[in-house]
Length: 274
Image 1 (cartoon, rainbow, N blue to C red):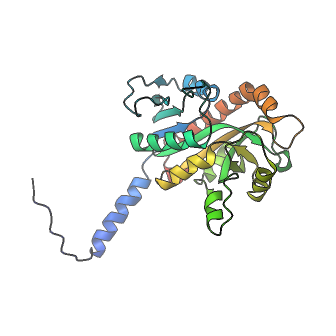
Image 2: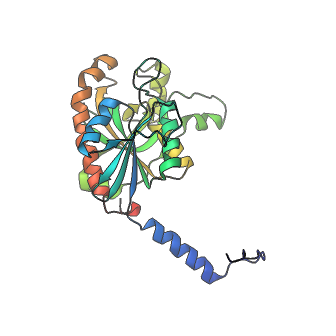
Image 3: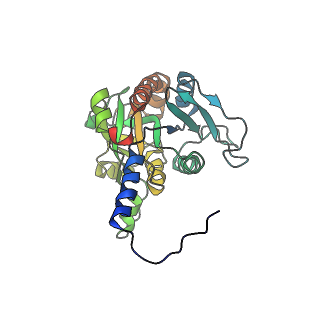
């Protein structure tokens, strides 16, 4: 083994800077290889597991012992796809929805799998005032929280956590997808306080995971995109829970089709080609 180079404290030469920059540019031009999909409900996940012919990981080595998180993985065309579902709550047996589970599985998946891209796919409520209809599928352009109210200067902005998602102008154009802002909270219903915050966020969509996934992805510098299918009209006449359950299976089929189109578009492309 060669001895370590002595740190002389000298600045790198212009040639060395150019070499480093070229290496960084080359890395960004590398075709996308590993994709992590974060999907919160089993009903939303299983059609994509079947579509991409993914296998469940049974060795239990990827995640900490005892957690209910489930990984499905496989090769689809030139992509290594990992679909992560937070699993069922260990006490109540329902899907582990919401921001806490989404944050945890996103963090654990990034650390273990080092993905090139994260896709958070799932269902969402939509606002007819913004043009949304049941069955529409959107790519989220921006995300924010609507239920983290911290009325102290600067902390209020931290609570909202507004951020833009990874730009996919070519994907949007090629697939002719709808684009809208996404607002995230841990409740299926909408309180008056939440409604005001969602309006302030200028959101077309409302979900329970997106902004949490975006926060972790941003923290760890991993590009993330968000594909959301509308199950219910939040500002409509029907009760949200009733409409959500009524439309979940049918809308999941639309989500399945849209995610497949997105993955097919991603295959063979670099991040800056999206």
